Every structure is written in structure tokens, then in C-alpha cells.
Length: 60
Image (cartoon, rainbow, N blue to C red; front, side, top):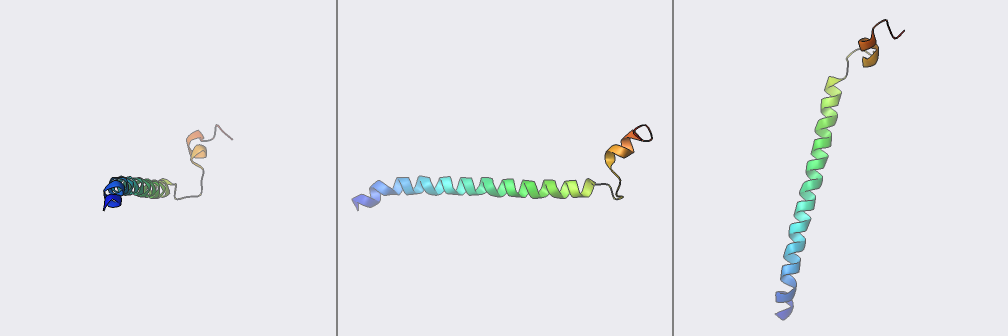
């Protein structure tokens, strides 16, 4: 029983650390997916480059 009393706090702290790190990775992954989806939605529908549209005829 002494071993359980000695190891239990370390195990609990390790589990809390694991859950926190796992949550951070999931949040980061979901944020990256949402950002990629937002960028995909904001891309111009036509195949033109945005910088060409902004410059107009001056850049040619």
C-alpha cells in the first residue's frame, strides 16, 4: 500500500498533464482546419490572381 500512496500523486499529475496537452493539440488541429476552410472560402472563384485584380492595368 505504501507504493500506491507514493506513486498516486505522480500518476494523477501525469494524467492531468496528458489531458491538457491532448486538449491543446486538438484545439490547434481544429483551429488549423477552420483557418484552412476560411481561406478556401475566401479564394477568388475565377482563376485570377488577387494582386492582378488590385493592380488593374498599371501592373501590365
